[in-house]
Length: 257
Image 1 (cartoon, rainbow, N blue to C red):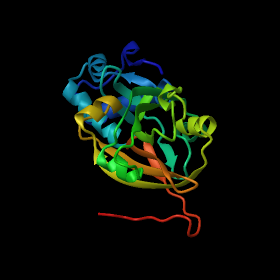
Image 2 (cartoon, one colour):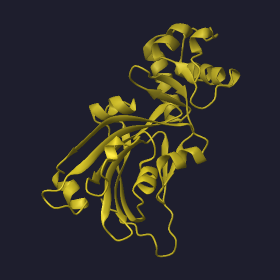
Image 3 (tube, rainbow, N blue to C red):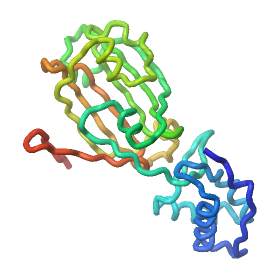
């Protein structure tokens, strides 16, 4: 991605109205041929370059973000970006990298933490485990074209996957489970809801606290019916579209208020 805005001084009406600022930023993106995901700069840098207040530039950026023409992220590597295209996450089960690579997106993974221990009540229920069973917990941040896309927390029964935490967990977990442990996946049940970003999650996904997120909770079974995965994923809603496919009676949708 290119960080280019502070290289250019742009002419702009001195009154710095929101409409004028919006037009100038649009022209800059078009004239420079910025691609989706290219970095425009930080809010402060843009305001200084254009000689307007941060309040004025913030109003223009809010409008452009609402129109899905730019993307603003927070944190050390945050800034203003030419809006990446929305990434489609389909519900037929496959590893996330396959979805993204099929859309020409460069994928990446940061492993945030792993541990083995007793499950909490919900994990034990979803994985149909005895009270003395242990699970592996894996937390990862998935990237698309270098920007955070989804925070993923997954749980697996220890007895099914000995040595799982010793594997290369930056890769597709499904690929690891299928090649290393020779599993055959069966039914997956996903629950999709809307939620708001907590302070911790907002920092990881580089969004504002309270920003809308897409929450997907999934329980996946082996072909013999035993649950082997219970996971929770939080997607940036400004970068994600979810599609649901129904083949005759093979899909069932439940809508809850």
